[in-house]
Image (cartoon, rainbow, N blue to C red):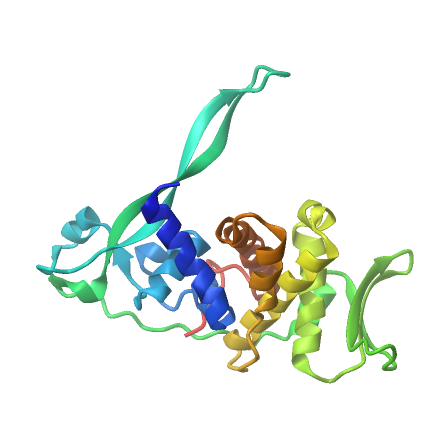
Length: 263
């Protein structure tokens, strides 16, 4: 693997270790500013936040808006997917498959000068009623007695879809809502995931929801620990789950193109 690619992946791993992952995913999924990098993958947006910027672009991109990189400024790398066309041996159909990544240098807006950039006005998150979101997923939310140290659960069976809550804590509801959203938005992926994977994904989504609404929660570190114990390459394992986490979060809070984003 290219050294620059590995370095970028290692930076994502460190974000999980630091405990800042929930807040950063919340910001990256619903970026506060409408800039080119807000349309990048979640992985690359996280790399921007790690390097302390909401706006990063390549050398030519900055030139296109009449700005140039300051002398001595240091770039950082984002990940660009590399695809290859292959022939399906069974159907002879030409397919495009991901074969890896390459690292591309970008520069922070803070490291450029020239024509002034448009004033970016942070957008506010609307006051979603997440109980309504559960109803949209066809899920009934009920209170249940506390037993067997279970604070909440999501159930999808013969009797329908239900979230049972034995705690008034919002994070319990958000965690179970993440399970419901996973099944609703990504049913195939949900079936393929192990119980442990689904639990840690729901933890990170719940933390990110809390950050979107200004509720500071303990960061979900279990995801890093789980992947460290179950994969040969923790960096690759984490990146593979970021797309799932992003899609679940958007299914709950709304599409970034349709709703204002959190500041």
